[in-house]
Image (spheres, rainbow, N blue to C red):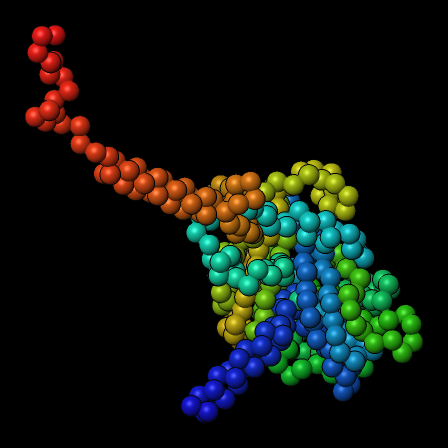
Length: 368
């Protein structure tokens, strides 16, 4: 018996510890490489993708942790790219637009937390609710906030490794192999050095968003380099296009889940990104339990219909009338009616008989 209790306590403890450990979010657009023996982790990646059929823009914001003072990040792109700082307000605006709708639904019979089963205190906690002829060409280089951005071309998979090593970074062995499909397709690269302007400051917390723009006749979101991840990954995308969009396949992950779909108004940072035009927003979440199974990049396509969708979060409440549970009124009413019926039948059963007998008072006396 003691062993069973200990085993149960251990299982509960392991469950609680596991709930505090969130899986790393995918750095699906590239690889993050710290300098020297430092470490860096992407705690969260938020990406907004805008596509009008000819041009694609990706606005990315990373939340990072670790002790690295410098790091490098690589993103393959199918065409010549421009890079600038993005507007942090864009993510706040999209978070608000896609917030689940809160609804209330009622139930009739009391549950465990309701009287008479509860202690009366109730549960007040709320659900809580990633140069010519040279193997490496530098197209351009600029300083953007805490970022040193280089736009590169490469003709062999080792080109980016050489570039990073020449700049003081150590590239993982497997990354060069994962870059080969992009080299074969003649893609270009955005290589970013994350170097804070304040000397000695580590890279922690939310970094400034980067806005990357390139020509593309198909909506593609680079994911192949996430194969290098050693922990489960998750991806969240805000896709802005003329229609509702969906991934062409799961590319080795769980089925993508649409968490919002609908036309949104061009206001604020969103209006600046869309050129002041209404746009259809599709929010997509996807999990990758085994990143090594990722077999390509996401290519998104328009769905057959622009069906709107918004998640709903339900709050269950006991059905009440005038501050009194309806079930109690119903049961009380039934009891009152049953009691009244029983009393009526009992009284009726005790009444004396009125049948006429031998001395019937209706008989008249003689001579009347």
